[in-house]
Every structure is written in structure tokens, then in C-alpha cells.
Image 1 (tube, helix red, strand yellow):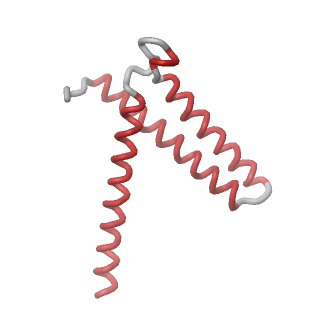
Image 2 (cartoon, rainbow, N blue to C red):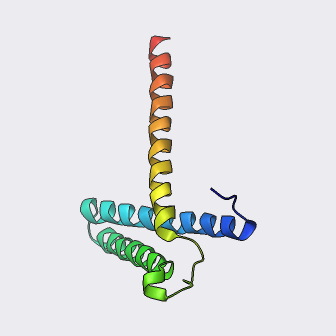
Length: 109
């Protein structure tokens, strides 16, 4: 694997930020729509739709299939999504394991 230059690293960073933000908007919107009432349900629906639109538009903008060659976003968006899912999963598992060890140590004391 080749080392990344500064521009590619910046685009990978921006892509991860935008895609994770989109995912969190979808999750928080779905949660708010399901458990909310009244105005909060409408806000949750807005969050859900905004997250879906941002994520879909970003993936389409980074796709050579839809935008031609070169795409608007000069990185392989699908590869970034795959690696982000793997890294986030590993991060969550590691954080939960650390929390479990911490709680186990606290409960023994």
C-alpha cells in the first residue's frame, strides 16, 4: 500500500467525518422518531432525512460510476466506508472491553 499524500489524507479525513455524521444523524433521527412525541418526532424525521440525503449525496459524489472520471471527491468512497466500518467496530469492541475491565475492577474493590 502506498503512503498517502497530504491531499488524499485530507479527503479521507473529510470523508470519514461526513459519513460518520450522516450515520449518527440517521441513528439519532430514527431513535427520536420512534421514542419521541409531537414536535420531537418531526425533528427526528428531519434528522433522519438529512442524514440519508447527506450520506447518499456524498457517496454518489465520490462514485466514478455516477459522476464520470474523475469523481468530484478524489478518493475511493466505498473503500473508505468499508475501512471506517471495520475501524469503528474495532473501536467500539475495544472501548466496551476496557469498560468491562474497569467495571470489574471497581466491583471487586
